[in-house]
Amino acid sequence: MSAAPHSLSESASVMRMRAAFEQHNGANIPLRQAAFATFSRAGFPTPRDEQWKYTNLRRLESREFTVSHPDAPYTSVIFKPANVYPLVFIDGYYRPELSTPPTSSAVKITSLLSLQQSDPQQFATFSDIQTDQSSSMTALNTALMTDGIMIEAADNATLDQPIFLTFLWSDTELNLMAHPRIVIRTGKHAHLTVIQHYLDTGSTSHFNNSVTTVQLAAGSKLEHCLIQNENNHSFHVSQIHAELAQDSTLTNHHFNFGAALARTDINALLKGPEAKAILNGLQFATGHQHHDTHLQVEHCVPHTQSHEDYRGIADQRGRIVFNGKVKVHEKAAKTDAQQSSRNLLLSSTAEIDAKPELEIYNDDVKCAHGATIGQLDANALFYLRSRGLDEQQARALLTHAFANHIITQVPVPEMRQQLTETSHVRFGAQLEYMA
View 1 (spheres, rainbow, N blue to C red):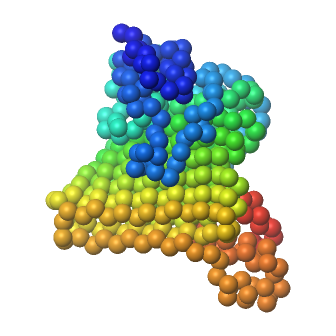
View 2 (tube, rainbow, N blue to C red):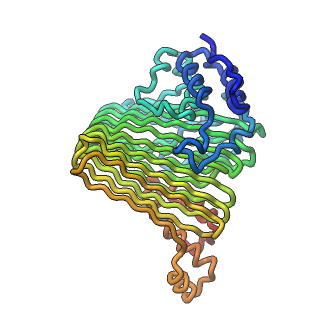
View 3 (cartoon, helix red, strand yellow):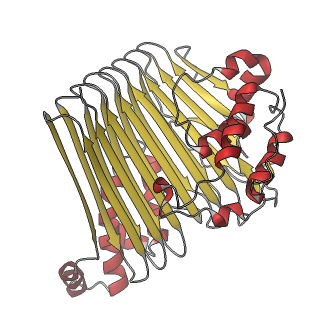
């Protein structure tokens, strides 16, 4: 079976992706071929798509990226917090020699690349979660998937430490792209903490297109962190698709600090009674950065809860987009859905677009949403200035307090400290005034 036939109407960017796909070592797998056919028909999303109204990918499409390869050299020091199980990815490929997976037999870690090589049939069906098949970026990830990891927790499994996934780029000066896939599955009453950390301290432009699927069984709990801190020349697209069974809980902490352009989609389907989704997030865009986050939570059955608390900070010519949609299905009585979007403009040239949405098909619910966009409080600034701080210090202290509400909820102390320091660097704070 060959790849989908070349269309004369294909854009140059799609043709470049086709060339990369045809060179891919998994291009003969039907799952990948079908996915690339979906992508080639749709192409990259454009502002004509309502979901991408405020985000234009022309900067991404105009770049040429090279397909990454396994075993590329990496010589820099790798940040590994204490008391975690570090799993390291270089250029999108899992590197077991740099990793320390859990030793518990109740939690199984499988490289998706090794699964493709050892059992192609199982690889073709590795995820039973219905991801957003209309998303061309998901389709592109499936077609060009470099590697990834499957994390499977047995019934009643509980790890003593978080699983810490670090995604780094190799020492090459090539403009690379990677399409990692993360699969998380829990058994009944299992408890896991998983952190995905995307970091790039170099100056080379890269393209990361990541998809994470989460499947929580009855009574299980997952605390999940997504931290994006790529360099300011790169492009980052992340998608999270989660299904929650009865009495399960997903707590997600999402941070956007880096990348020239970052887009994150988080979709949660609450499919069992007493399921609960807690989504917290912080976006900070400065310079010419563009950060766009779309949330969609669907309450499919009665007695489910969702709570969203997102904060955005825009400075210089940075732009932040937030769209949060809660959909309550017809049979989903006793739904409790709360959504909050608070945003801070630090510059007259920055821009923030916030759009909370409720779509409700049942009257017996408790739902609320709100969005605010404002500047630093003049009275608070005056008070801090009167106590001896200069204007920059006062502004930094108030910005820190605004961001810290989200940062303090991260479960790993070392990560809280790093996030605090990263946010300080972003808004020009002097750390001694944050003690």
